[in-house]
Image (cartoon, rainbow, N blue to C red; front, top):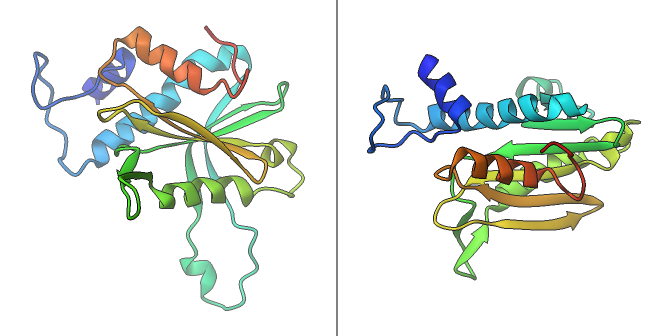
Length: 194
């Protein structure tokens, strides 16, 4: 736990080789994926909270009316990794962190975004529209991946919601990682922290 905290504080990526020895995490990827999620959320808590932002992890609920008795027991909830909110600025940014490549081999093109991730973000954003929460009605989303071979920063608007597909280079210096993460919350002018 102490080593994880040091990694998050130093914005360092654990590797199999190198000069720094660390306890070996489980090899399933869950440990590193959770560390990435917590590091991103922790970064925004430290940097954006003083600027009036609320940083949280959020569970979203479907606007659903079960038609059968057993559905409630098996219908999954939606849980986003990071939510940035600034009521004064009227902004909500839903961030979902992934510890995979941002693109995958495509059927009809060499590379493509993972459609499942797009559907997931779309569900987070669109399922909350019309419930009387103005931040939900105009929320934007970011699917954030570590850079694997290439940097990506693309954006689309789908039914009034901006969705950004971005990477962060975890092998960069801490100041470069900081700049990359701050750049992501500018959709435009979403955050002011320097």
